[in-house]
Length: 326
Ligand code: ADP
Ligand code: MG
Image (cartoon, rainbow, N blue to C red; front, side, top):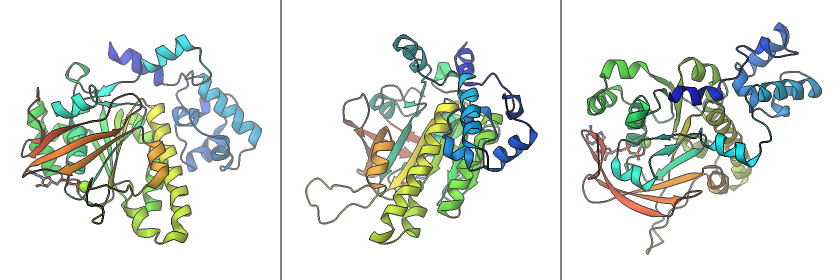
C-alpha cells in the first residue's frame, strides 16, 4: 500500500521526549520556538535549535538523533533511488497542466505559480486543496491541505463548487483543509514556523502560501530594504522546503508579478522574489491571460523537464483543459 512508503517519513520517535537527551524542560523550550515534532527537528539547523537556549553540542545531538530516526543523513547512490522514489506526484486535476508537469506537482520541493493579477494562481491553489484529498489511484495523496492566505482570496463557496467534479463531498472536503490568514509578513512566517504539529495531526500533504510575496513586497519598500526582504524570504522558504521534505508534502506558492509595460516584445515579467526565489523554487510556472476564460501556463523552470506551454481554462468547474480525465 502507498501509506507504507509514506511511513518512511514518520520518525520512529513519537514525541520530542522520546529523543535521547530530551527531557520535559528541553522539549518545552523546543515547542516554544516551533519545533513540536521529531520530523521538523530532523530538518532543522543547529542555530535554529540553539535559539531555544539549548547548547550547541546538545542541539547537534538532538538533531542527529531526530535525523537517524528518519534516515535523513548521508546516503549511498542506490539508497538515493529509494529516497527519490518517495517523491510523489499530485494531480492538478487539469490534464494539460499535469502533462506539462509530467504527471503533477512533486512532493518535497517548491512549485511556484507566478503571473499577473487574475491569471488563475489562487484558482489552481484551491483546486489542489481538493485533488490532494483524492486516493493515489486518482492522482491524489489521500491527505489534507494547509492554506496560508495573505490576500483573503480563499473562498469556501468555490471549494464546494469544485468538489463534486472530483467526486468529493463538499462539506467533508472542507474539513480536510486547514486555513490561516496571515496579516503581515512576520505573521506569515510565524504561522509556518508553528505548522509542524498541525501538518502531522491532519496528515497535511499540501502546503500552500497564496501569496508568498505580497506582504513582503508591501512592507519592505525601496532599495535599501531589499537585502532585508530577501533574507526574510529566504528564511521563510527554507522552513517551507524543510516541512515539505519532512512530511513528504507538496509546497505550492504564488507570486504576483507585473508585466513590464516597457518591454514590448516578449512581455517579460520580473519576479518579485528576485534571485532567492528563483533558486529556491524548483519548479516555476508562469501564467498569462488568453482570450476569455483561457489562460496560458508556461513551465519556465524545472530541474528535469523541458520548457513548454499549454492552454488551460478557468470555469465554473475549476481549472480545466481539453485533456481532462476528471
Ligand atoms: P490570481 O492569479 O490573481 O490569484 P485567481 O486565481 O483569483 O487569480 O483567478 C481569478 C479568475 O478566476 C478570474 O478571471 C475569475 O473570472 C475566475 N473565476 C473565479 N471564480 C470563478 C467561477 N466560480 N467561475 C468561473 N470563473 C471563476
Ligand atoms: Mg490570487
